[in-house]
Image 1 (cartoon, rainbow, N blue to C red):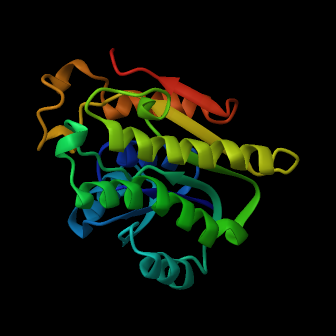
Image 2: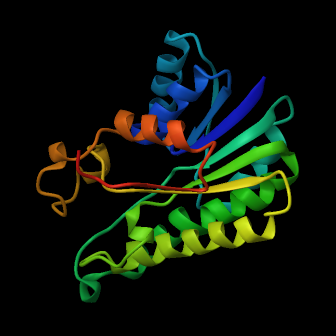
Length: 223
């Protein structure tokens, strides 16, 4: 059975992608920073008949990425790698902090780059790497300068890999989706009414419909 690795898999879009892909015959491997959320997401996938594993991993840590690669994938045939983990801090650029800058770049850009490098030799023929980038990777947005910069970095990485591997059987898909109604906004007043946004399930369904035939997927936030 082929394995789909999903970062940020404990909640939101990552969990919904895991549920849908489990119904397509993938063994789902969820990774994220919060063991309790991973355990709950894994239980949901098992409850619908899916096969699932999970491991706590801070995508910002190169050491943890290397340990994950060495210790958890020996019995897995990796066919799909989904970079879904992300973090955002919003507000005027002048009020941003060094910690926010580092956290966003380490999570949104450096983490996916490092994990891709670590797992590249484990990907099977006809594998897919999917970058969940957000529409912040398509255009600048007010009060999102550092978040947008980190997403542009991931976009550039993905587009460059598309060119590097265009004559191979490795596919790279960049998915740009707008804001979703998720806990992402719980500690932020950047979005006044998250309920007007698409649900993670809706976005996951659209991604699953398109990722095998498109190298670029754009899903705007409004329903």
